Length: 88
Figure 1: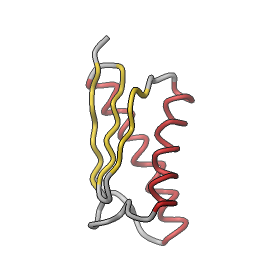
Figure 2 (figure 1 turned 60 degrees about the vertical axis):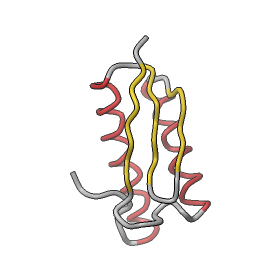
Figure 3 (figure 1 turned 90 degrees about the vertical axis):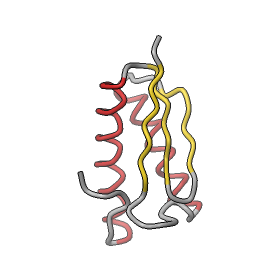
Figure 4 (figure 1 turned 30 degrees about the horizontal axis):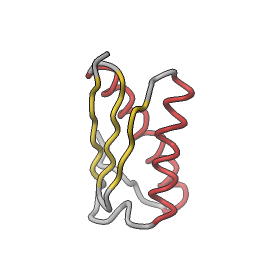
């Protein structure tokens, strides 16, 4: 099966530096994979980016990234009053 990597870069430097934010975003990626039946092979994060490896083609990975961005932006905005990722 094809593997595809998508990377989301935070709106501001250090957006994922806070351990609780990073943990929640990584957990959201894994949970989204479980809910949608998309195999998440790997998730890694730096202080300013999240990379997700999907066992699937590029189109599946892009759709996954879009939904992950939407969901985690909504969570981050509700909690901190600001977006985490740049708008589309």
